[in-house]
Amino acid sequence: MASAGSTDWEGMWGKGLKPGTAFDAAKPETALLAIIAGSGVTGLNASAEPLALEGQRAFVPGCGRGYAVGALSGGGAASVVGLELAPTAVAEARSYLASAGCAPTATVEEVRSPAGSHSPTHVQRSQQA
Image (tube, rainbow, N blue to C red):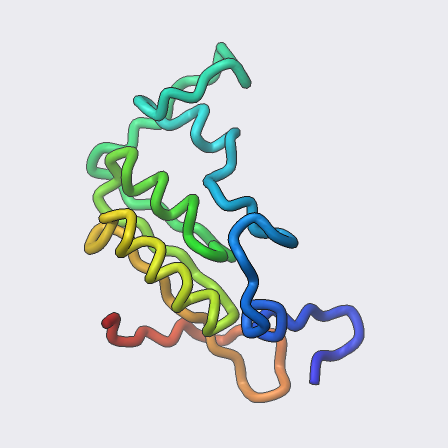
């Protein structure tokens, strides 16, 4: 049971959250795309320097379905790791990344907490299918 003030992320994902519903935007954030060189998105901040992703590593906490993970990977990052609390979201993100052709440079890991706690203590690395 979730405590007062907490969010039951797995409960929301487990009900079959569809792309484009609730908090899922069905695409990477436009502001992120606007600073990834070669993304084709422009106009948000003409003075912003594009991200130099080639050979870099990136981290996306609370990555959801993995849209930002995929965008950073597609933008040339050598390695992108997303973290997610909900096991169903991890599965959805891995599926999305595989269908987008991002693996093996993009991965999503599940953050595990002790039972009843909402304070993650470590990342549980699991085998990807």
